[in-house]
Amino acid sequence: MEGSHSHPYAPTDLKLDGYVPIVLPQSTIVGIYLGVSLLVVSLVWIFSGRSQKISRLDRLLMCWWVFTGLTHSILEGYFAFSPEFYKDKTGFYLAEVWKEYSKGDSRYAGRDVGVVAVEGLTAVLEGPACLLAMYAIATRKSYSYILQFAISLGQLYGTAVYFITAYLDGDKFATNTYYYYTYYVGANASWVVIPTLISIRCWKKICAAVEVFQGQKKTKTR
Amino acid sequence: MEGSHSHPYAPTDLKLDGYVPIVLPQSTIVGIYLGVSLLVVSLVWIFSGRSQKISRLDRLLMCWWVFTGLTHSILEGYFAFSPEFYKDKTGFYLAEVWKEYSKGDSRYAGRDVGVVAVEGLTAVLEGPACLLAMYAIATRKSYSYILQFAISLGQLYGTAVYFITAYLDGDKFATNTYYYYTYYVGANASWVVIPTLISIRCWKKICAAVEVFQGQKKTKTR
Picture 1 (cartoon, chains in turn blue, orange):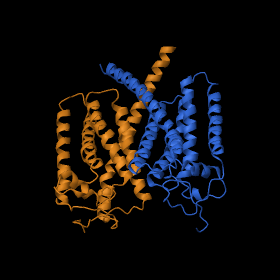
Picture 2 (tube, one colour):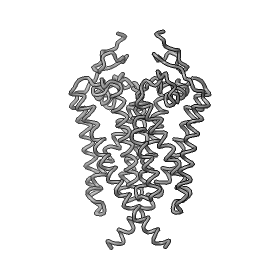
Picture 3 (cartoon, chains in turn blue, purple):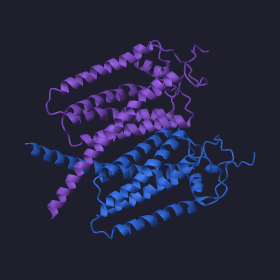
């Protein structure tokens, strides 16, 4: 046994030498994530409301970008660069998060290269870009739409690779149906629905702007 | 041996039961790809030149989109949906292409799920989108820039996942240094450089259009 504990993940033949069990209860792990997120989102909502120039929809988008940006940078950033999180003995919160989430997808604990590649790109490129998107909305930068579009497309591409690779590998990485639907499907659903909506909106806004721009150029050259 | 031939790929412990060796020489395989591509690109260049409204740069872009679009749809499309191409006995050209390319990256013959996921997305979504981009440029659609941007970003994301997963898996999939640099690095380099240049150009064009658009709206509401 070499001091190793048996893990709760599927498939059971997954080797995780040195695995240390979760110490925090699920409610605490999920509660802290949702609680901190709600706090940050509330702060962004309140502060953005002090400017009358920012529409309600843009304020909502700022809330989304801060939430998803911090999730990418902190949670996913920790995962991408901590190959041995499942050996953590200190009850460190971020390690607990991924020990818990691995019940929905053991490829996290098992360090599947596809998952690590997608999470690495998400953490390093998309995380900071999300925070930039929040700033771009608040300050009405001309790159606001194209940046939001780029990040959303990256999120959709990453999520697609994430689901397709699991499917091709036999879709056998959840401890049970409960974790499959709450963690693997449920927790990722927001990153399918919201980026889709944002992409469509940005696409339309940009097309409208380009149409006016092309029309102007035509008028000028006449 | 069960009628199976030994394969030329790395690592040597890769199992490919029923592998049938390549029949066409490298020069034929590469020559047909480059020859057909040159033919199609030339046709697009000539026909697009008959319209005086299309700039030289836009014509060049149309050539790129038809080349990459057909590569995605036909070559990569065949790979994505032909898990047993390495067993092909007929000398079918597309199977030969991937038997040959696997010398640069055996994950193709080995059906690595990350590679299949990326190639599937590329073939199904990006391939047809590239041909649409060519059409959008020719007909000056307002969605032309955002579509070219979206595809280029998808290509860059796919290529990033492709290289990162190989790196994380030990970068051990090339038969030798020659194939590593010509196929794995060389053949993919265009899909890093060109999408990067196109993304930057589209980003700038879109920002300029949005700036004018936002300025107009301000003027109107005053």
